[in-house]
Image (cartoon, rainbow, N blue to C red; front, side, top):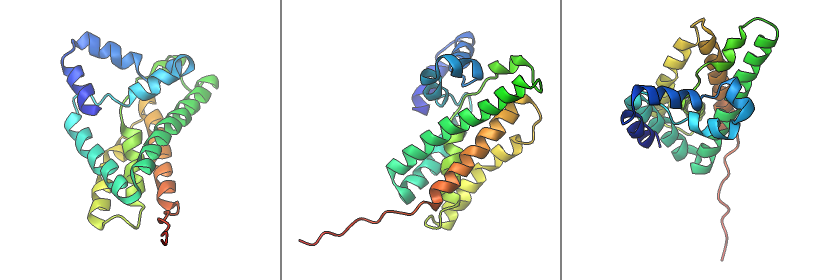
Length: 186
């Protein structure tokens, strides 16, 4: 999906790219009106960082799929993307309501697969079943997210909360008991 979205991305004019990013942003304005559209659409846009996102997505989601299976990986990513977005944008809405942030923050650009990747990376890092080198690789993918957490602008603060929630979801997934297949005697 990331490659298909990127291919479409490079074939568009800069004006069209920007318009699509803004229309698929999971900002407060869109979440109030078209959440069913922006939640899935926002996770597709990697911008010009496609090589980075392709590698970290394959590494983290692939590792979690090997450790916990495809269903758990899919649910982990979906839950992290939705809950991370709802919590981070909800806190922003509260901050706007109390006057701590300008109402223009309802239109902060918020796109990308980072909440999904962060949750899968955290689940692998916190999993005792994952090989040490894979856990280290997934831990390294979390470094850029932590670095941006210390930026003081409104968009970075929203992203920091969302990434924190996604990481907590990933850790919770790693702590869930693993189902063992039941042996059937014939």
